[in-house]
Image 1 (tube, rainbow, N blue to C red):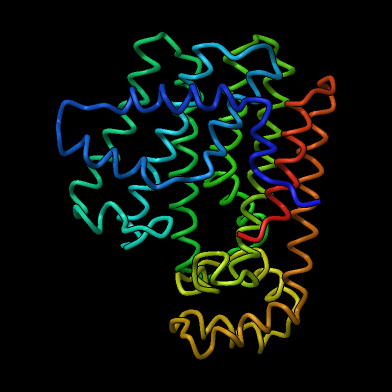
Image 2 (cartoon, one colour; image 1 turned 180 degrees about the vertical axis):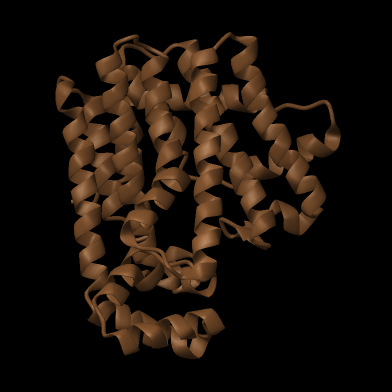
Length: 325
């Protein structure tokens, strides 16, 4: 049976609605331009997986409190700020099917709006003495930046191995998902074993999520997935399916593929590279690894008693690994 996100949200549906109301209040600004930009960002409906994780972790660890809502707002503000900044860096013209903020208002305003979002999150924590949450999120910002810089550096050298790939996706993607779970637990309990279990659950979930994302870049349908197949290749990003394929091919074939990528992937040769990845077992291998990390994520939840929240977190792992977009 296909799992729907609405089913996963059910145990905290009321709390999610309350979060959305509080989040809008946090984002208000007396500067009209900022207010216009924020309203535009809010109109781009996302899945809101991160605040969902915070609230589920909080409810499973104890109970959802005002601190839980502040933690959910903190991670969502950071996530939104990074998306705004990423669109500037990537010169993206669309976000979730709509024009990106930088497409409408330009890079300068977009960067400043991103800074505003980040500072809002920090001030929420400072004003309420949530220094443990602030410490957690600050380390996450550092990891996300380091992961992005490592990927850029390695993409130029074209020498990413599997261990480096895991380091990159752990820092770039899994760190924030792990932080959502940790902050949710911290907002409702002092039990270190519960906090660590959720931190690890989020880390493994984030790694599985990114591997699946990288698989979909080669096999996802453009109409469903919302972006062109092989988009990572066009940015010279070496992801797990390609890394595995290169490591399990002849030296001549490996050199030829790398040469094509360095020259710049075109619409003409991208199909050949994707076929090479499929024929070399890169997709199947990556699916196995994603499954391994999803199993590890579920294992982290065994210390908790059965509940609707636990069922949702297990289903969320399946939702992430078996999604097609």
